[in-house]
Length: 225
Image (tube, rainbow, N blue to C red; front, side, top):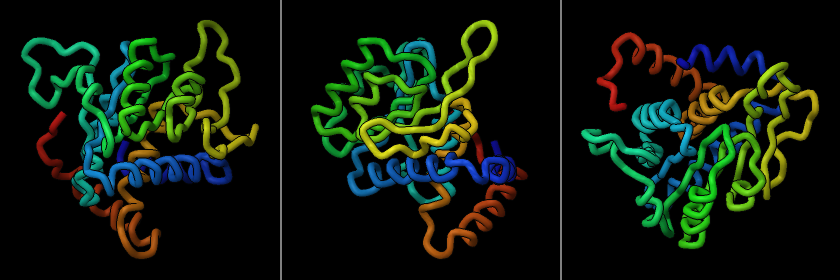
């Protein structure tokens, strides 16, 4: 999702709590990674790999001048022949200690093995953030969390939930806030993580970012992912 589409999405969401919620969570992410230099680890569940968020954060790291936003993607299954930056398995979580940031992103309930690894990382001093559909066990382990609308169940879709957090003041408890799927929330979070890092008035930062991203879309750098 390019910057123009993100701007249009924010216009659509004006008057809801999503803009403040995603910017607040992006602020937690920047605060966690900026002073420590222990690395950002990004992990999904066994059935979901957050490829898009990894790519967007990698782009934001380059465009915003914050290399610490560039994540290491943790994969539950590493295929033979994968390049080094796509060949990091769950064993890497065992080395996540003080100074590291672990961002867990999944639309489904994490299994017991992932929760155990997240628990160990937190116990070893890592900062744990969660972007998911509201799993209580994961939120208990997270220092900060943002809840997207859960995937619709089979058959008629239910009413999506409002954004919120666990263990921290709720980003929104408004029943009028429209539910957003996890992919959309990831776009908003990654965009906010990069744009809010710049000095000066926010409106100028965002306008400059739109210009840079428009130029990047015309002549993109070679993709990493």
